[in-house]
Length: 316
Image (cartoon, rainbow, N blue to C red; front, side, top):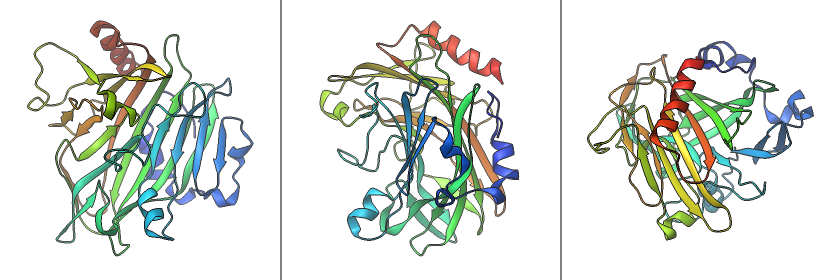
């Protein structure tokens, strides 16, 4: 996999699935200092200086009810500067189905039924199956994971390729990463539905923000109404953590993503993201991409945030 600042989902989603490797095979990428695999638990991604930046939570354990609850979906954490704690939320705290950077739909239609692939109710789950590709380079460090979206009977409704690329941080940027998700309907047509509060691509800050209610938002223009408007190019959210300081997360939406999308970006506990409704015909795929940019401190001015979005667009 050549890691560059381009739209890679076509290559990863359509041409290399047959070559995905399981962590159990001890792949060569473990020789790189950029990755640390805890077998069956997580994959850590570090920057060029050895600082841990991301953790991909990949466990899927059905040994008991608590294990199922804790491992029913993969997600990505963003490390705090100490390399041990996180800026994002795990399985504990209010709304435990909100976990780090994640994606899902609460009303997923398949085979004449509707399944909850957001709260993961009644045994539905997203199951990590292995890695399509993992590589580190000067241009970026990342992985693409194969994830099955299964109904309570274990039938695979969607095969997902989730690509995450971490880029060398520019001056003043703590972490910058692209998330590209490709969903393929493998056993009949699938409808992605729900609402902005319970579906889509989402970021959830640390559980502490529930108590301090520090989340505040910046939009691309004045006079926005997030509950009515569509297709914002980006939204930024700032929040405070005791002992870890203040952080700003800018989520940018690719223009090639499905349109008529809505944003949830007003909760004081900070969960925010983008949602859309689409039907994926049997055997076909749907892809979408977001960039997440994390900086320390209060949000910069709107013009600075807009400039970061424009640089991303220009880099394609």
